[in-house]
Length: 259
Ligand SMILES: Nc1ncnc2c1ncn2[C@@H]1O[C@H](COP(=O)(O)OP(=O)(O)OP(=O)(O)O)[C@@H](O)[C@H]1O
Image (cartoon, rainbow, N blue to C red; front, side, top):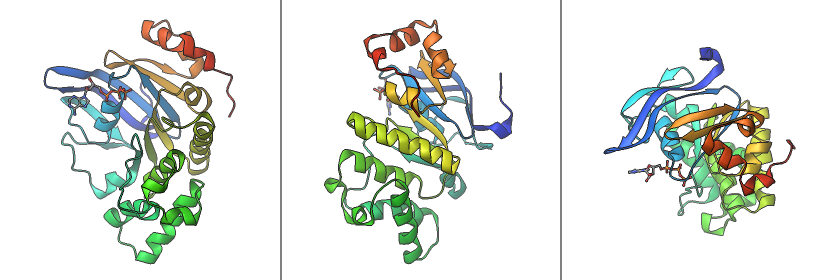
């Protein structure tokens, strides 16, 4: 069933993406609701990052429609307008911070690129974003090489939030973190969703994240979304890949919702 436009943050319809003759996304349709945390799962190499990168305009699609907050995202990648850039923020795998810039300068970067603000105001906003993700002002002067994995993810999240986006895209946000740091990061994402009304599109393999923070989970297999719904629904899915994913040995990690 198609949702009404006002409730949809991201609308993907009949999307096809491939590299040469290798089709990765094959007539995929998906609606992400405004204000929800949607988790995307799928096999390694199954196309989760390709889907995310196509939605944000970094990869060219062969066909299909993509709308973000009601605006059509054109076919040509790399031509994001100032308006489009402000609609979303992205946390890439490994954080992707600029190594020659301090944490604070990394957060200021999108402000410099997309807004005409005084240096003082930019610093003030960037410090507020660092505080929002639980970092102290003294962390702002550190370079990426001086940050722990968890701090790197937080700085990357602060940078993703710099332009007050409506949507954040998170590519495996808890990968490489110990379970406590991963749990803290999950709580932070849930808190930001609630307080800022953010829509979160999260690619993850982290079963604990899926179970504790995601409102709905979408499973990508054979280039399509084969099941979408709350975790309870995914656990009942009869799709062979979804069954294998959620009822394998690792499913022991699944606990009742804690947040
Ligand atoms: N720029 C590219 N050029 C050619 N092939 C690509 C490119 N980017 C991705 N692919 C291919 O697309 C497929 C899907 O890759 P993708 O990175 O989306 O997988 P994934 O589901 O995110 O995997 P993982 O969970 O391991 O990160 C893979 O076969 C990959 O080799």
